[in-house]
Image (cartoon, rainbow, N blue to C red):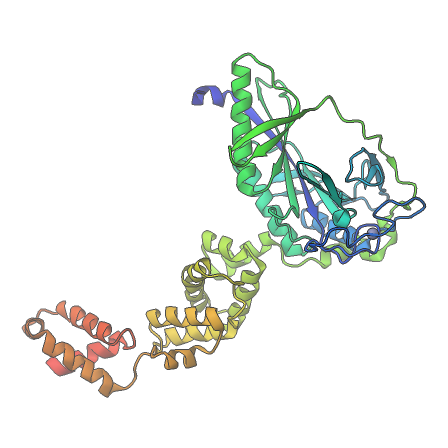
Amino acid sequence: MLSLATTMTYKTTIGLEIHAELSTRTKMFCACKNDPEEKEPNTHVCPVCLAHPGTLPTVNRKAVEHVLRVGAAIGGSFSIDYSEFDRKSYFYPDIPKGYQISQYKYPFILGGSLVGIPITRIHLEEDTARSIHSDTESLVDFNRAGVPLMELVTEPEIHNAETAGRFARELQLLLRTLGVSKANLEKGEMRIEANISVSKNDTLGTKVEVKNLNSFRSVERAIEFEVKRQIESIEKGEEVQQATRGWDENKQQTFHQRVKEGGADYRYFPEPDIPKVVLSEMEDMLPNTIKDSLPELPEQRRERYSVDYQLKKNNIDYIIETSARTVFFDAVVDALDKDVALIRLAVNYIVSDLAGWYAKHDGDEYANIDPKMFAKTIKLTLDSVLSSRGAKEVLALMAQGGGDPEELASANGLLQTQDRSALLSIVDAVISENKLVVEEFRNGREPVLQFLIGQCMKLSRGSGNPGTFKELLVGRIL
Ligand SMILES: [Zn+2]
């Protein structure tokens, strides 16, 4: 067991390498469809992505634009004067050419930062095919071969698991906000590798690379495990081996995969079949053009929600987590004429009632609810046409199948009854069932009135208005 005091004498250094499959219509260097949902193997293939001799790659402009958009969003600098693609040679059954087209010395983006973590570079490359192994055979599906892949590398300036997890989550949110990648970890659309080392007294630690991290939680767990494992080795007088390790989700621990002997020799050299890229010669690829095309970024959105509507941090985090929620919320804000009091009431129903309903039911969030109808529900609540209990029920019905809150409330007996004679009969029933309490009230014990109002509300199943009941009770008794 490690003591906290021992652990604290070590410094943890983490750098992340994150790949993301880009959302484009076609693959990186050919006209084959880029369709991650395709189930039939080897459907979207052609001589180019199967690496037949004599074929020539052509660059997918959209993929370049996607990478530049990410670069602009993180404040990185564009390699506007010169960039190129390179061949990264290695042999593997899922690399049909025997090399991968990537970028080496001249990536599109250098520098920038996200959640305070400096970014080294972002480059563009192609994905490999997918290998499928069984006990008796190994098969290769080339649908994924040549799909545009973005690689982002951070500086080794992350010092704990929590920050690494926060960075990865924020990058996913950014990629989705920009619409450049679906970035689902469980589908392999976003893949995270962590380089982890521990060191003491300013010495340089040995870097261990951990792969196969398929969730944010496993990123954090793997880092925590690895830091502890490395410190334990050093404390026992052993050396940390420079290696690549995998993450075993069941055992919740990293395991040895292969030794890394210095840098692998990929024999990088410039791809001779693709012209050099000079972004400054393309008007639609210039930094300012790209910057102007960016949507509102997550950080700007947080700021707006916090300053303009004074929302709480955890409510903001909930709303900006998916674009369905953000689009819905922004439409609600417009429908409420940006009235801060109404918006804050609306947020309460979103983060408690609707969030709760969606957590329990399948289906796309906010697919059925018209933001204008949701806004109308809020206004009806404020005007006491709906009680807060009635509003909850109306919202559940809307989440299920849409509709107009007034019609739903009236069809389901959820309107606060405006019919005084109906309310009066409820009041009379309560008075006759609670004679002793009524007597106490008549004798001047005012607090018991609240109990009687409560009984009326109960009997009306929430459809009465407490203010009206109070007025009627007082009128009847005194
Ligand atoms: Zn192809």
